[in-house]
Length: 389
Ligand code: NAD
Ligand code: ZN
Ligand code: ZN
View 1 (cartoon, helix red, strand yellow):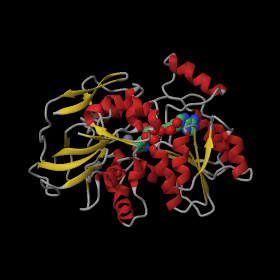
View 2 (tube, protein in one colour; view 1 turned 180 degrees about the vertical axis):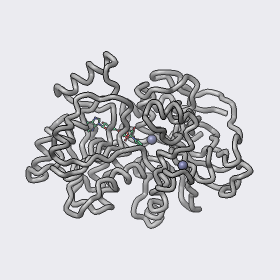
View 3 (cartoon, protein in one colour; view 1 turned 90 degrees about the vertical axis):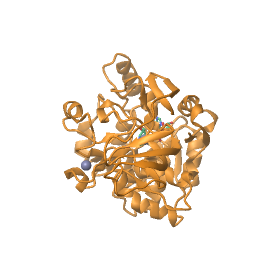
View 4 (cartoon, protein in one colour; view 1 turned 60 degrees about the vertical axis):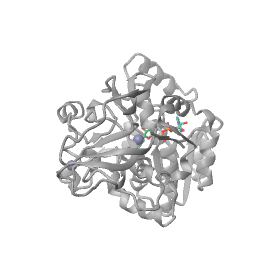
């Protein structure tokens, strides 16, 4: 089959690879009908997350038709249409019983490595480094889904791929980011990053009843997309984020702050950004924390900092004293996808939201390598790419 294969920094190729096969009784094989490129894939493209090996198939947003199931898989049959969540979960370990699916204790087949690096293992993820199991990803014609009897979302008849696809990652990710904020009707929620995750965080914060939602980015087309949903835009290249947020909140600061940017934050020319750049180049720091520092500074005292943005390793100069004295709450993590998808599927069916709004580009899988660049460079007003194998 054909797939997108990681070979190193900024080197993703469309190549022939062996077809996947059933390896365990709970598995399923799907024929991928749609997949997408995520902001998290860009961190791999830039080689910022350790643990990729040349030859690894990338992609963790995908859906398709079941073509084969393992002998113990009673939940699926050939012909079923499913979205595959990016977090592989077993459904019966202690963490899964608490619906903490992204830290499932059984699905990471390199769990011992993760125990050493993180202290305790996290779940297996598709197409996302050896640290999370080294499972082949879904930017491919076919995908083996381990633990497929639990790790799936069935798509109701009549729902298009474009409406359902993002249930596997960015929709529940924006949703969890907002839920973690424990939104009250008087809250101002500020969201850094108007990429796909930021877009879903904006809509989720509005659905969850925030009084005011503010979105921060520098790309006009992304700010406009968020504005169309009801958010107040701040362009950080044109105005002071701190001054505008103070102004919008009567000097109190946003009650809740969401980091939908992660480890590759841009900053104009602040001292902390220059410092991060230099340390990153000397390999003394892996991530850039400009957004985190800005959020801690501007957040209202006793507020919540919610972090869906991915960080990989070490960051320097986090003002923990400021955060402690202000009594901030930090909540973060990879998304517990299936914890939210029943509710979100219903909201799509009821017409509360149509996730396809975010798609700007749809192309064949063979154009994937070029599309990584278009998406990374934000060329052609690119916000979200869907690939059709
Ligand atoms: P993206 O790269 O398309 O979007 C990031 C946006 O942040 C861009 O629009 C960029 O212009 C903006 N940005 C950069 N610096 C900024 C700054 N200083 N202030 C405000 N905005 C700034 O990516 P995405 O697909 O939207 O993903 C966003 C983050 O969420 C990534 O880190 C991704 O890895 C992460 N993610 C996490 C999960 C999870 O489970 N927690 C799931 C999906 C994605
Ligand atoms: Zn993702
Ligand atoms: Zn589990």
